[in-house]
Image 1 (cartoon, helix red, strand yellow):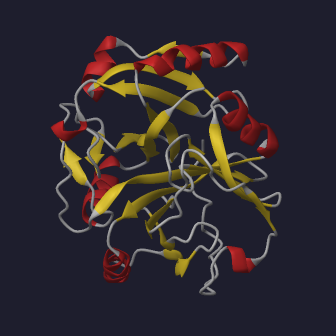
Image 2 (cartoon, rainbow, N blue to C red; image 1 turned 90 degrees about the vertical axis):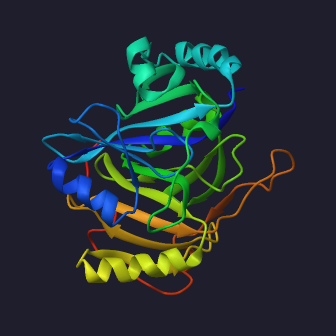
Length: 294
């Protein structure tokens, strides 16, 4: 049984690195991190060395998502299950581990969608790095969501192969899962889509006022707001979704249901009705969750 700490880093392709670098610092309120590589824009929003990396690409989208393992003992069951499921994987090189400040890492490719997944342990204690909020008190990355026509197969893969725990699902629409034993309602969402694509990336804040301040910041900067503000009754989170310069959807959220490691409630299968999406009654725009490839 593989045990995780949390979603720790997401890499995104962007079409204009300078434009996106400014947006993620000034609007999303991430802290720039100097890594010595000017071809990559690196940011921190937690006590991780790097939380988000932006890399230039012809098309914008999700490049990879990385989860921190609880300890080095998790590599053995991880490799066993990757081999048993015929999942292609490789060790992350020592040089790349050093640049990411990780001790050891594996890079795998989800066989259903080709999404790159990384798993690692830290090279230094968490208190080595400190996120210094300038505009918003972001706690850490919350979750990443992508859509796929291989919906059931992908949910089964994360649940049965990677030991993610199912929290809730909306019938034939989206499944929310947590990287066990992480307590938050979901660290990944897998949506049903006609084509595989990136859906959104979430940042959890520790102060509800930061959601309100973001709303003001987006309005002043004429940044498209595509959903909210509202409250997801399925996870209890207050949310606000907006678009980055490439049209990829980002989210600020405050609050979320948590689960104990033992004795957690059973996952629910909920009807696909608007009330489960937003109890405040807002309606998503057509661009919500549509920008970005895998």
